[in-house]
Length: 461
Image (cartoon, rainbow, N blue to C red; front, side, top):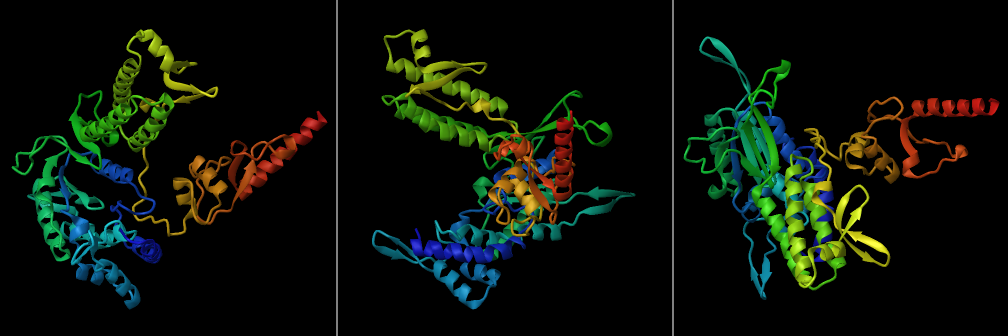
């Protein structure tokens, strides 16, 4: 692990390099980049396949962070000599283990602040190479001209998928990527690379698995449906299938095993400690999958956890009845059913339930957007924070989803926005978030005039 001084210096170098490379990075690269997440990558996949079944190459780069060629990376970095020497010194620093120094002839420093950025720089250009090799557009097939869609490469760090409607094209793209990775000292991991289809089985020997694929803990596949459940194309044309993105079976099992391990570790501990240990795990996992079709999965996990907690309660009181243990550890909240809760110091500490997490569709980040482009209106409404905005304005901007609540138009970069009290202070209003809103300057003037007019009319009446 790097020392604290090296971590601070790497963070400083990253802040210098990141704005430049964020302006260069390809639109479908989502891993370890500011303002982008795994949900953006999954939404990009859904947008690509939701109207047409396609072939998918699900690939992984073998030991990406450990095998990056230093010379090729430094040539690609192409920075000024002082910074180049500093980055080279980190790459060649070596590994100290058990009092023995091992040289690092390749790979990026493990645990380093700058390592994810260097890995993204090393892999930059994959999508461009694919698009240049497989141009899209109209092609003449026999006596007719046929539209050929673009080959899509969607990458999250060292995991990526190649998507296209033609199997031969996807296989050719796989060979192209293998050749592209070779100068960087990288190769595809054969055990984690397979060709599949989103709707039908693939006859190729490389398929080696079920229909659909797993990516970043999600399962993506399509199911044939009847005319009443099918997705439709433009003008109501039925497609005959529907696309689903759900939590993967591996991710579900891993999460349940973690919950069971926590419950087993608190057999003899107070209920409040068990709740404090479970809540962050439940909340984090549920929020990660709250942007896809996961309601049934969350409900099922809640039921499985309930069965585990019932066994936990019975073990603590083997001589008590089921009704007694239920009223000892579960309480009824008005209109919300039974909750696993503990009473301490006249306060109720309750466990978070999986199924209470709302399912909200994720909006993918725009292709070439970067937090360094200065568009405070876009990033403030998306993230709820931005360096050029105060905390209160950024929070209100996200709550309002980037819209002025008076004219209902989106805020644009360069617009003059002002904070307004919904109920004016002279009429008994307060300055909390519940009474604040962001308006265009001219909308604010109109509302203020309307507030004063209402006051005068009420006094006259």
